Length: 301
Image (cartoon, rainbow, N blue to C red; front, side, top):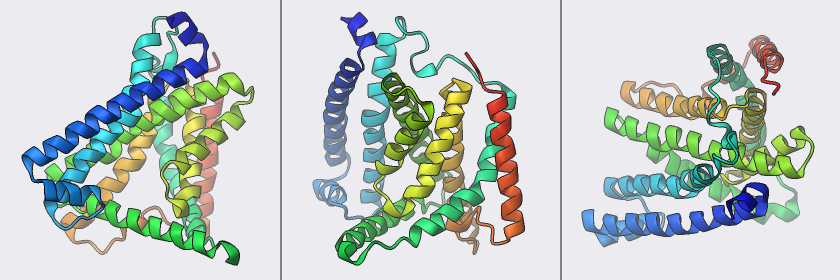
């Protein structure tokens, strides 16, 4: 049975779906009943319906967010990894530790990519659909506004405990879980069906951006997905995109915490934005140089 599972992508996908279904039912049900036991049914029901009128509802939504990440992105891939690691030692590529030089290169890559990502975000937010799709655009903007409000409420903390919870919920778990799924599983599955790593990386990045359902942030998240895909391909270690993904998310959480703590006038959404074209060009040159260095120092086997 496990021999067939190791050879057949569709069997792995079916097992993934079953584990996802059962883990979601168990953890979401557990979260619901614990919420009622700890707080009250009215706050739990209001939070699940999208209403955030008090701190209890906000904290409950954070707990459910953590349980959702565990059930969707972490438990199913790790179940496949545990079952198949003896038959496929490099399954998910979690046993290869990248060199310190590669890690430093990833940090520089992230810093130099910020102006590019911010510029693409500005372009994306100015996107206008044709007149006959005005209803679709209005729906997309409403979804974007609701997501932005929820994210801002999640990030608006002024205590270290709240900051630590946000780091876990918005940086650690997404970095591990989304990379296990998108770079670990999907790139592996698509790679067995498509004999072109560039197409595999692009498809995976597209799905990575699309699943977040934030249409006016699609392009920057797609670019991030492409970067994550190539760094994974070149390093042959899933820890590299996990680390890069963590840095990206943790930076946002940390900037918001700093702004809330210090009452700074800094707009967290504009961190990394460069208005000077000279500085922008310089950052792009650094970005290209690091990309070249990572490619030249890639793991070839």
